[in-house]
Image (tube, rainbow, N blue to C red; front, side):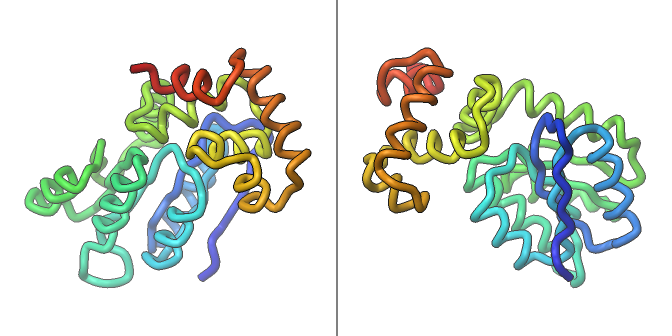
Length: 204
């Protein structure tokens, strides 16, 4: 099944949601969207893992068991930790051994079904306001500076240490365009250089 995507006009964050129960999945995605949270919903491990490798999320929500009896959701949690993204386990079959494994894999929270949507939104807001890991801190900073999506894309590449020419190749834009966006980013972030931008986001 293809992913279900919707981008609200105002978003407080973007989450990757992995759930194979389509009724519950649609319900939760709808509730998150109403709470101004941009949600990419997937029902299978491979599609979710692929999205996680290509898209920046501020949180991952994963059911432990998907379409098999293997706890594939834990592998998503493990991947999220590798990418520096906060994660939440949701499950209707709470097994303490598996829950402990999930926490060891890097999960930040665990919710047992059924749960109130307000409880999940509260956790997501907490993650957004108090970002964990380098990616969380970066995304929170870029959002607070009111950067456009293109400016965020360029800023992420700048923070990876790429040169302007490398950024132009990676983003499919001209060198002049990269320089224009870089200047815009520096102005909005009130910095004068790449080093100052990095140190502002990740102070030593």
